[in-house]
Amino acid sequence: MILNVFTSFGYFENADDNAQVLRNAWRSLSPGGRLLVDVMGKEVLAGWIGRPQAVDLPDGSYIVQRDTVLDSWRRLRTDWTLVRGETARTASIRSFLYSAAELHDLSVASGFGDVECFGDFDGDPCDQSSRRLIVRGLKK
Image (cartoon, rainbow, N blue to C red; front, side, top):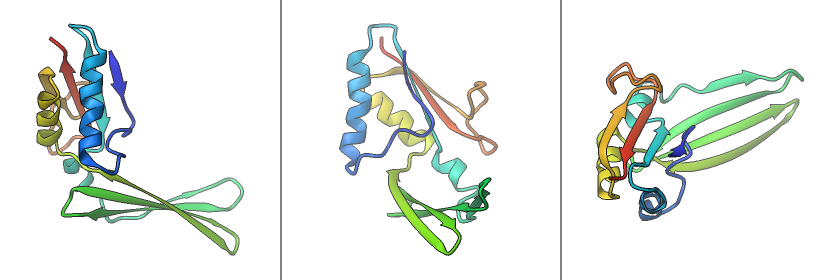
């Protein structure tokens, strides 16, 4: 089994490189092996995007996270700003966004069979109340 969890998929600058990750996973598995990918799907992200999130830290500083959708919902930029006293530092990352249908089809195109999408790790359906996008595929 190969696990790709905690939204660790989609960070290459080129979409083909992200697809190559799935093809490499398929090649690395023995027949009967499974791949599980956990991301924040477009459907989930659409429900809360736009609201900055702040976290207070024990030393009195705080972190603000802001997400911005780019390229007509193809990419996401996440900015983290650490505010400590009078100083603020910001770091950013960009990642590709995938809907359940897109990641399903990308998994199939990479060779996986019996591809299923779930809304959480409990195996609940991928629907409007999903908290995550979990995609599972089998190497036949």
